Length: 299
Image (cartoon, rainbow, N blue to C red; front, side, top):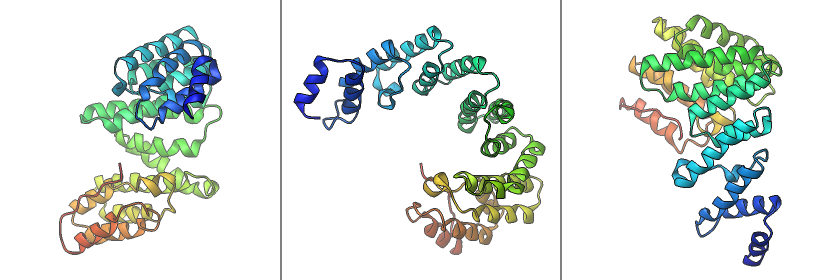
């Protein structure tokens, strides 16, 4: 917007004007995003039911972040049955896991049979177990994720196939390989029914990797290798095509000296991971030369 348009909006800041200003200031060419802060505070105070992605702050925003965080906590407390407010609070409190858990549990209490809130709470636990360094803590957090995913899978509106992908991985992380293998097998056996969904490729990929990791832990090397290659045969997905495939099993097999199998896996992944920045070719060349390789996804 030009200066005159901005000035007009600042002179009569109703809801529409506030939203327009927040959006404009969020992408300020001068880098002065701080001009949106007063409007963010107003929005949370007066219209917490209105979603505005450009109003979401991070701890890097300094003192104003703490102010807005506290306003969202208060909004969630004073609007306990307003699912729009609670949804916005969850999004805006993303940097505060304990607060997110609190708000999601509150929302779930108002829609106890809905899959959505238990899925959201599971994502909270999944993010934490993936980030955990301590093995015992990782298992504990993964078990929390499994518990919520099981409820979500049985809830109203549940997409059992989509939830199953996370359930298989979380059960494996929790040490429940019997459950993990059962869910992963279900995903593969039922894949034909979900072939038109965007997450079909994720399910094929991750289900095979879970089964491969379980096989490797049981020292069933040939079965682990077969599942790695089956994971590479996925057609890809929005996530796999951009961030890239999972290399946990491939790395473990490299450590076992299975360089040819891993090279074949990388070749298969090249069919869908076009945003690898040349990594796949570099790694394959290093493997062929007998050099050490450190596999990693984007980001």
